[in-house]
Length: 361
Image (cartoon, rainbow, N blue to C red; front, top):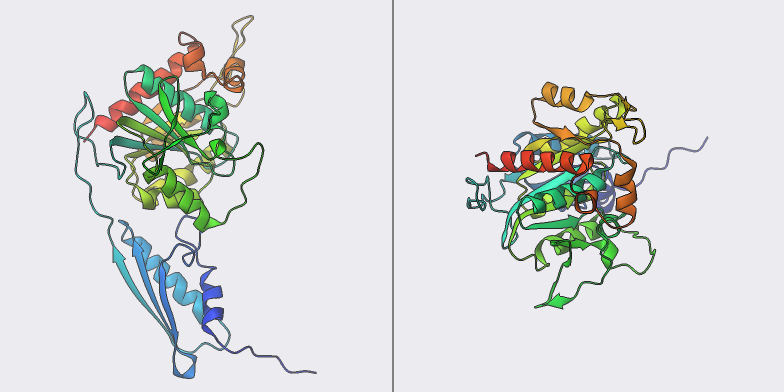
């Protein structure tokens, strides 16, 4: 029987092992995110690794260091493993008041933008983008200057819902956002040819998020609403590392399976020290347009109960109406198309609650 073939220990092999170590709460590995500063091999295959992470969570550096030590020690032929970890907090931003409001928690790293609010979900299929677009329109109706950043690089749907498919222009080497209904918007969907797919790895996604955040002429905005992709992956981590978010909104539906996944979205925001502005329950109930009968298709009240359990604000309920989908397909958000309808009023109530949360110190 042939003996086992032993592979020589190399820096490349160690780095391959480090690719299996994820940033806590995210799908992205620490190597691609730039946390690994150096890998050195010594006598007897000893390994010395230097790490540096920027976070406000004191538990994150400890967990990463422990995960790296565990992973590398299992590498074939490795000797003693030494991990040197340094951590740094992101710089605090100056506080600035919102128009007609009290002091904001921090100044986002985007010139002229007073508040950045991310809308996320733990899974797809809960109507997150529909909520994000109509929430933005509601905030604009409430007298605020609003922008929408479509950070769903793989599945950009905001341009279609906003009825804006024009190519952005360039001024002073920055992209000019496309405008419609008084809102400014930027999306990967505005830059692609037809139905071209986006096939990118993590670092390219981070570059796109940085471009949309810091290389767009957003101008003066009260709130920039960011439509995140579903889940907890590269785009989410890239966004919170690029700009200072003032809060996160989680979209869920009433059934237990959706609420369970929504908890992951909340945990993701908490891990990167983003304040939870609240939970919105989408498709909360259905009212028959013919007879007026009320039906809880997916159950009811789960979002509110989950908010109470997690001690986060409950922002409101959005009913299940066919016109929300019809208007979205036509590029007319229902808040714009039918501002007096029940769904539009529900979005306006959510917008009012979001503004109240932003105004809290």
